[in-house]
Length: 183
Image (cartoon, rainbow, N blue to C red; front, side):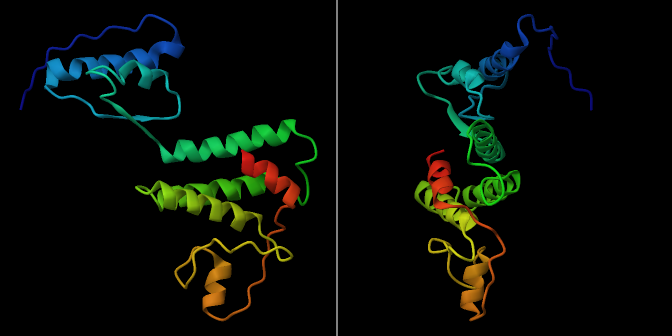
């Protein structure tokens, strides 16, 4: 099978920071002429420059931006790391650590992925994950974790099996929790 397409390659001229925006615009622009289709969704990585170039390409607000869950998850960790490096008194043993941020970031991603399609459930799961990660043996905070044997929360699974659960995490002090929750 020999298929021929009219195609011209040309190099991009301009700043590297603008390359993604120009590329997205070109793809969306030629979609009608070359393929007789219009894109309705743009999957982005948080950088809105390219999306801003295409969101009104077929008319006002004709393209919707969708976020990559992995990038959203990564941004949470990045913001916490940046914040805790510049804020004294939040980091160290028994407080905010890279290990804790990794744990919170993973639970955050699970909460989002498990509740795609429902903002309310997603928000509830993110808050439950936050308190779950902050929990310690002295300060159990599993009240918002899902109940039952199928729960992702080991504490709630142990309760449903009528077993005792020993929390291994050192948790976080309330003062640090309040600061992180605002982020």
